[in-house]
Image (cartoon, rainbow, N blue to C red; front, side):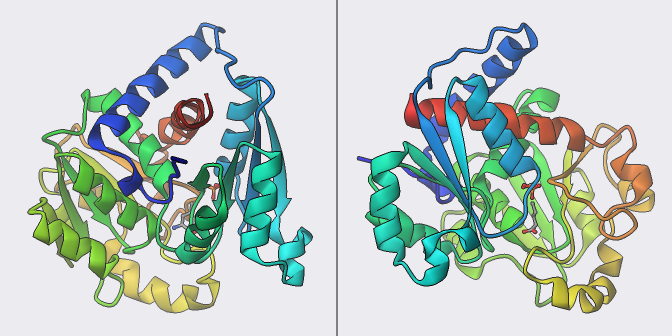
Length: 302
Ligand code: CP
Ligand code: NVA
């Protein structure tokens, strides 16, 4: 059966643990200049509808380090932009390459591609999920605290794709996730319902102070995601009380780390002082995209 990574729910808790263990090993090996090359002769296509720095470069560099090759495809430059059906594209790409990373708007596009592909489809960000990001976030939490089990993780701000992927992580792993989001900007209702039905420790309210109190990990992200640029000014008003700043961090334990998937807007969702300060783990988090995705590629293609 072809395995895909459309959301983190495609992985079992054991698979997530194994991927993270391997990611730490690959990071250590790379530090020693001993990267394995199990993917010689394998090719990863990257079909992108939205801009990217980290996702694109970490997949391209990671694939190169593992001995494989990548092909970057801007959707507008493919025949998809001239109405070639997604199903035909999926069939043809399956004949050429070994996996496809897709960055797009609708999660349904990925589902449709996966339905017709005979190779793994990897979600490189949609409007509703960003599983590769949260794999890297979990790796960063493991580095700092030895594991996520038993921790409290806060999410402050927009209930967006990264927030949803953190909820899927809480559906698979044992930690408390406390989200503080303004009314009308909550994460996916179906995921929240699932968390409630499965008695997961996922809390949603509108109180950033309650979210960060006792939290070892504090997450935030931009107030307007890609595709929401037209709402940016309105969102700045709504989200102002949700800024991660020194005052908010005073309510969190001293050992708390701050995560931001980047790109960041200093002075909006996070202050420069916090993002560039001692509690920020954002730079390790960005680096870990490379190692976590190498583990993923090795597992899916190796
Ligand atoms: N965090 C992240 O996915 O960054 P890019 O948009 O630069 O890929
Ligand atoms: N929520 C952001 C994440 C960027 C990596 C967006 O979708 O634009």
